[in-house]
Structure formats: C-alpha cells, structure tokens
Length: 236
Image 1: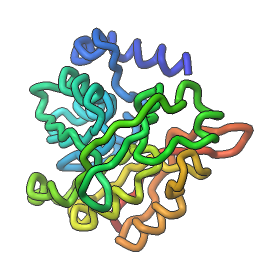
Image 2 (image 1 turned 120 degrees about the horizontal axis):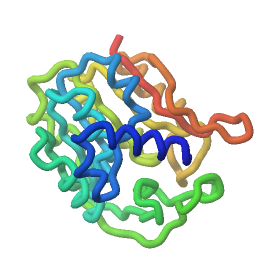
Image 3 (image 1 turned 180 degrees about the vertical axis):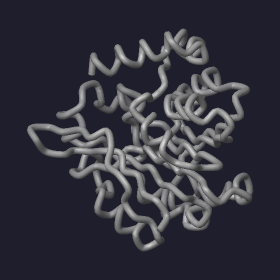
Image 4 (image 1 turned 180 degrees about the horizontal axis):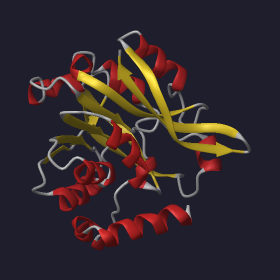
C-alpha cells in the first residue's frame, strides 16, 4: 500500500496535469495505465467515478477521448468536478442500477468503499476503515437512460467499480453494451457486500452478450486466495 502511494506521488510530480488534483488530495489510478494503453476506444464511461481517480488517468493516457462519469455521493462528486473541470469530462451525480428510482447508499469510512449494498463482515475484516458510518438516499438511473450521449460511438470502454453492484449496473445497460468494445469491471471472488454478485455471475452475463475475458489485473490476494480483481472483457 505504501509502495503504490509513493509511485502515485512520483507520477503526479512528473506530470503537471496532476498538480491541481494533488493539491486537493487526489491522485490518478496509475494501476490502470497498462490496460488503458492497450485498448482502442472512442468513448469512456466511468461508473463509480468517486473523486475522479480513474477519469484522471484516462485523461492522461487518452487525452482526446470524451468521458462521461457517474458518482452518487455529493461530497465525492464535488471533488470530482474540481479535479476534472473543463477537461472534456461530464459528471452525472447519480447511482446506476437495473431500475430507475431512489436507493439508500451505505456510506463507508473510506468513501470509495461505499455501496448500494450493506457492507459485509468480510469487507470490514479484510480492508481497513471500511466500516459503515451512515446512509444516504441517492437517485438511481439506468445507464441506458443516457444512451443518447454516446450512441454515435461504437468502441466504448465501460468501466464499472461499484462495490458489489456491478451486475445490476450491467442489467440496466443492455442497450449501451451494444456500443461497447470493452468492459473493465472490478469483481469479487467472495462476498464482501451483502447479496452482491460475484465474478462468475458478471462473467456469465457478459459472455451471453458477446464478450470474453481478456485479462485479470490488479489482483487482491489474502493468504494466497484471490479476493477481487479488475477484469477486462472484450467484444468477440
């Protein structure tokens, strides 16, 4: 953990585009650079934008590609806007799911571990500062509700990092998936959030819609057991 923080700090110091973000405590998610450098996309959807860490590394690796992001927590969305204002990035302050409406988000002490699902015992045990500190009602929409914003693009990268709610997001994105060439999704191999879909569920859903697994990256291992990772799927 300390090693990645040092690498992120070094990367930020070498890239002036990061200095403004660094001043407010945000660093790009440099662990995704290799994946981003290998794909040929014409649009990026950042679902679970948090404070803009992923969108920021996208902006550095693929400076000309438009980005639309989604983040439901108001405090995190405000920081996101400060980090990426005026950089061909649009943010929608909403959660995404299978059905539109309103839901209660479980706020974690570590904001990027917040979820529309209750935080499970295993999550709290394995990851520090992820205990629940409250709840907040947030709007929920379907990704397909926004399709008009990217329907002219055919090689979209859809990134999803929503703490166990990935399958619900995908079920609300069946039309959008037809425009996607890549789906890059964080999945768990064991239940960290109550009632969450696991990797096998997400993979099965995507395989039925013409995607295959390309790579598994950024693995989290505990006692030799894979807990979660980022999975890149490509359209066949």
